[in-house]
Image 1: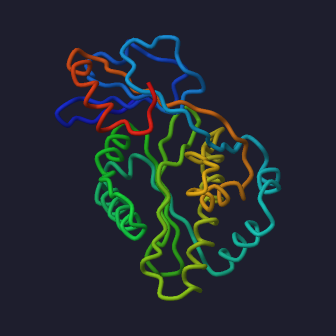
Image 2 (image 1 turned 180 degrees about the vertical axis):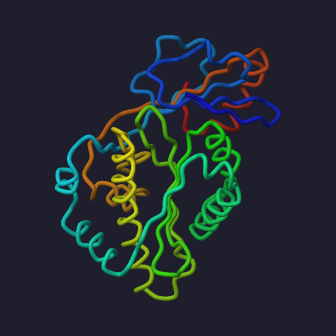
Length: 262
């Protein structure tokens, strides 16, 4: 499965593939394969390979089995969010395609969150819209009563897998520690609701979109671990798929593929 973006060159993003699919690369300048379980034997045109860890939750398990893997505090926070009136809404690709203003809104909140953290802001709208256009994007939101959404989750979906792409908590609007804590509970609540939604839709895997033991990501990783899940190793591989792609591969690796190895 893939979607593509066009800006000077054509970048085709492959998801949920078991191996490299050369026949589907025709017409693209670059092919990016995400979250492969192993490195393909075909390394023709490879520019970079990134190895990373992720956590996955088995959605084929019974609901009670899923919840039994949650930490005690996580279960409590979810129950409390329910008591406080937190609710969730889901948006499939058809809805997102017809309402790209919603994608733009999520993108703005994502950018503001990164600004608050002092991190580099990246425009994620083209990527999300391209995925929605190929029916490979889902989103959800949590809110309390009549208030505005306080948490957004965005997923790349396909092959019975929901892979977390973005998690955006709207902390900037919180005026007290109590409000920030409530948003944290809404985030946990929404993850659980997402799991149940995808399970009901027949999905088998809930991928947490990465996991790292580095100190910089300790709090995020601990949050994900609080839901259980098993650790897996995956690879993202970037190929030059055309003559233009090969000619530009040196510049792409130098200025774009930071963190990728040869």
